[in-house]
Amino acid sequence: MAKERTKRYDLKIDGVRSIHGEEPNPEDATVIDPEIQPVRVAIEALETRCVKECCGLQAFGIARREIVESLSGEDLDALSQRFRSVAGDIRNLKSHSIQSQLLGSTVERCAFVKWLQHIADELASAAA
Image (cartoon, rainbow, N blue to C red; front, top):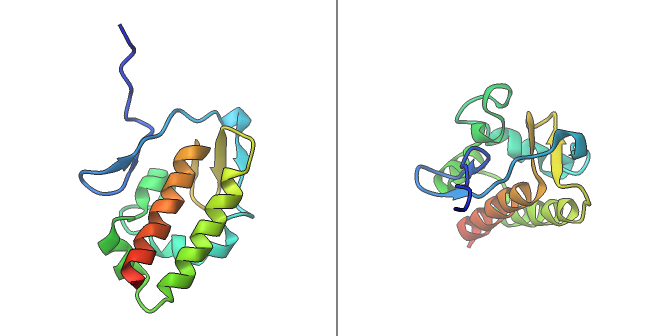
């Protein structure tokens, strides 16, 4: 019998959707704070559900409505491109896990890249 997958490491988008995540390995984690600097202010603006010290990435509102409300007045298309660029940089890292003091999280690298890409896609859709 196959082992049932836990959802403990999934990253919630909204009440229905989530990004599949696996258990991170803190000993293998690469610190990504320098890589996320180009989108730091935007990410901080998305910290609307809780505080990162408590909930890590779950503290960030990444449903389209939350993104648009938090980042109104910004150039959403340019911001989308910056998120895509950061996602590409992190995708190219070799470690299985990433760690960020800015985000209060250690997560699986692939799940975090999907998290960034989701934000980029929502920004691009809202800009169109």
